[in-house]
Length: 452
Ligand code: FES
Image (tube, rainbow, N blue to C red; front, side, top):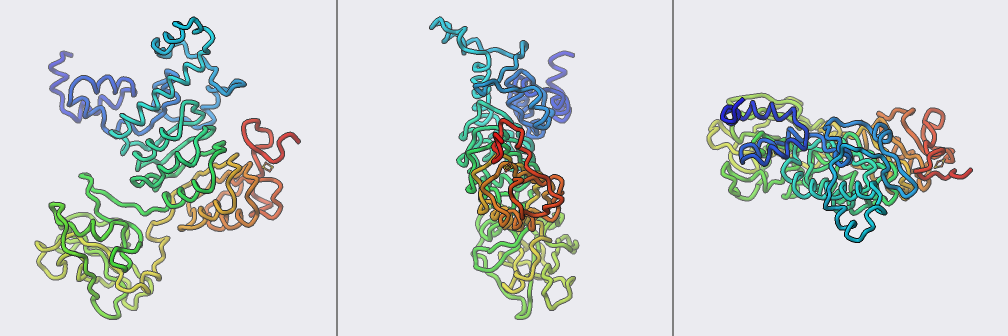
């Protein structure tokens, strides 16, 4: 195929072709011209980031689980990689400095590999992730020796749609996890493996709890935020359904701020007035308000307040917080927000039903011995962990039955066989059905019975 024919291919076709390339090949394509650069950096092509593997010369983008990784990576006594990949790229510049000092042979290949991994991680976090981060769903960093807090922080801060995060057996600490919650990172998380992150404390669990229970904000393809999915206090002191601030919603279609939000009560006994989301008049309604219908090109939301004295399906035409949405003149309608007129009504909302709670299904904190009951309490708050099935607290010898029971009560989906905690806790939850500590025979992970 001639170069001209390739250059003439439509972007959609090129994108499809690029989807068959590995990360290394994509990076090369990105250097061809600006069009290819833009396509190669499409977030859809970078769903899985696997730097540990890539640094070993395996450029596959298909994630494996931690167990598989353990099969190919082993630790020697100094905690460095000892596997040798003869086909891996080798950065000669890294060794030349050592050869100048005539001691290159004293530097093990594993150390060089760690240096290369660290370099790759630095480059990925600084240059790649800021461009493709929104498309990233999986970050596999298990057993990375080249990882540091700054890299993890940058990675987390730029991956708002992250679903799968594996940081097991790494040296990261609380500082790294300050990336949770940045730009929304954490609210899509389903799998989180922090096994062996021994420096981690309750501070990370607090941050994690806030991040994973943050309400979703749907976005239209152009990136415009259209609605939130939970109740939170709006800037005007009343509850507003949606994480979008009143100020954000009070912008006109050109993005200019509208006048100050003003909540007007429809009637004194109204419990809820809710979203007439009318920005373009034809947007599909989704999310928070459980019922709705298209009417006159405008998506109307219905009451979400169970405590309302009105029929649940009563459609309130809101008086709007930010523009005229009442009446028939759609042309004057502007984007608005859900507003609950009375605080009492907001309290009556079942926050669980508005999709506010965590989506986490797998959480391993095995060997994170610094966490305490206080940390578990953070996880039990903010709606709890409704979807959590797997919870590994093996080696967490500083938690007690009180903390465990509180957390277990907030995890209704927990599979007892996948619930692990210290054998020495006699009055823990599901004492007869939960599993015991998994760290008893593990030399890498902390256990209060080590050495017995
Ligand atoms: Fe107590 Fe392992 S932490 S048995």
